Each structure stands twice: as structure tokens, then as C-alpha cells.
Amino acid sequence: MRPLLLHLDPMLSLRRIALILASWYFIMPPPVPTRVPPGHPPYLGNWRILRTFDDADACRKFAATLQKNTHEMKARRELARATCISSDDPRMRPEDANPHPAE
Image (cartoon, rainbow, N blue to C red; front, top):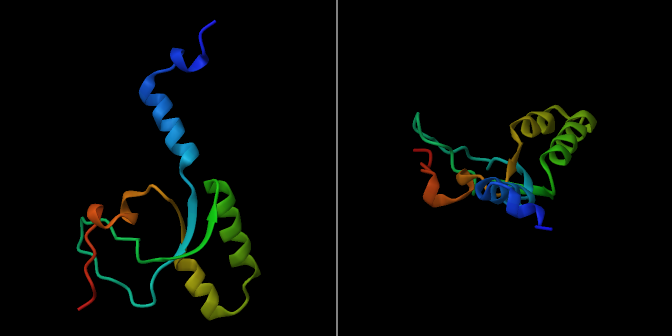
């Protein structure tokens, strides 16, 4: 009997492996925002990683719980800017994004 992987499309298998290997970050933007020209992806490598997760659902649940349980208005506004992102997102790599510091 052949292993199951031999019957799958090789690219599909690689995508599944990549999804399994990727972790998820709950990240917060830097205190001083960077300017990004229209049409360019924002560089997220300088955002602060607050926590790492095995999957997107766990990250989103954490974000929702944190937002719900935070009562100070300033902290709630800051958390509203935070997001979950895959560790393999190209915006996390400087060569794939164009950071432009505020002038």
C-alpha cells in the first residue's frame, strides 16, 4: 500500500506543511507609527510580539479576551491597534516590505 502523501498534489502538501509549521504572533505596533506610502505593504518586523500561538484561532481568542478584560480606556485603544499575524507573513521580513520612518 502506498503512503497517502504520494496520492496528494505535491504543492498542496507543501502548503499544508507550511501552515503546520507557521506560528502566529499577537503583535503591537511601535509607539511611533511609521509612514507607509499607498500601495506598499507595512513592515511589521518592528512591531512588538506580545505572545506566540500555534494557530490563528488561539491568537484571535486571546486578543478578544484581552480586549474584553481590559478596562482602562488608553490600554483598550492600544490593544485595538494590535493584531494576529502568521510568522511567515512577508510583511515580517524587511526585504519584502518597504519601511518608511515618519518624517
